[in-house]
View 1 (cartoon, each protein chain N blue to C red):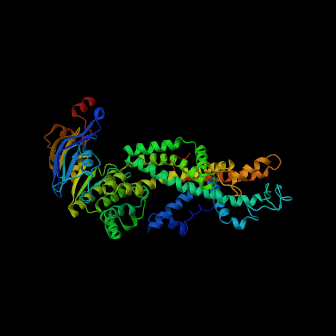
View 2 (cartoon, chains in turn blue, purple; view 1 turned 60 degrees about the vertical axis):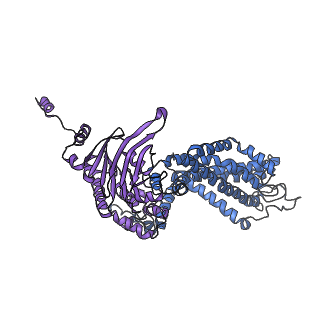
Length: 310
Length: 258
């Protein structure tokens, strides 16, 4: 037997990333990111989730090149209506003789639009309300938390319905409705994290350096709240997609002929028994993307929020 | 430099009222190291926190450099008085590199030349530039406490409040940190207020000290008196005895032997 195999020496780049003595801010940050990436890739399901999300981004970005047909203009209504999946129409056609595959491809843009818009509206609001109320405490906390409670008590879909009914149907109004009902949980999480942090010595230390309250909140409290919030937002993505699809299904989200997945399922409802693919294909797309975000969220939680893992 | 007159600190009201500090007065001269000694719960840390504004001053006066402190404290105060905390594992922001931790006070006070000041501060506490971009989890307890000291000194304060700066460290590192603090005081002509329950630490670093119990000052004495065991107060005597560790009374020992 040969002696024990030599331990694998880390290659140049990896050694640089894992260096205990980084030479610059960037090296320190990248090294930290690399460690996170390593523990993330240990979880195959999380990588699968990331793959699905990356695929969604890719498809939305290159929809023009991927989709073989137009998503809105149908073919010959006499011969190409409600065709089953075939080589010409991979996922079949719907009642307007439109290629379902192309519609799903273009629909990914709408889904992504909803997700991105909701998260960039709801996350900052939740983060701001939560950290401010947690850090300042007192009457500010009471007022902000009661407002949060009020929003938390609204049923999401019903509020969205009321909102859309008032402002008129459309994907933008649906987004706003979803966003204003999804920030309260983020505020709660951010507040809980802030309450844990605010009495710690490192906050006292920066107070003793004369830091202003906004500086403490944004520079010292927010960075510690943000990771658990990212996890929560990612896990909520599935719910957001489903709510958007639900609004579309009820005819209150995206309006025809736009290829929104929920609206597509709604059209397929009429042909559910005989032409199952009309409803099933967009339903499958909703399922896969929601699953992808859930898996990704789980993986991120293991990396960013070790306390909550397992 | 520092004049504390009849300081009272009260937390809570009514049934929950706690008198943490009762009528404590002492004066610290410029360049002096002054110790606050007592058991846990004696209010010694609260005195420090009241001086720097982390605890409320309910009664009495705190004068720094002849001027009474304002609530909230102004920027001049923070440039004059800085604090080092007990637990170096809790006093550094876990997501900030050493560089960020040290540049924060400079940024707050609009100081220029941050780059050079940070390297200088690291050098003062005996750490090389290789430590600059590390995160706290990449440092040992002693190194963390050095960073905390560097952070406190980077604004060039005149008074340093030390809240049990060595009690979270193991014995060999304790000595290093104490010697570092002693050197820094001489080099930078700093005034120290050291809070500790460890009489040896206080006797090593301070000239004069105040013994506290249940929020009250028991006795002001000198390190010299402490070392020679010549304390006038009974409570101080018992503290000295306790610090010498457990000794079996000879009579008991013979009784068992016989």
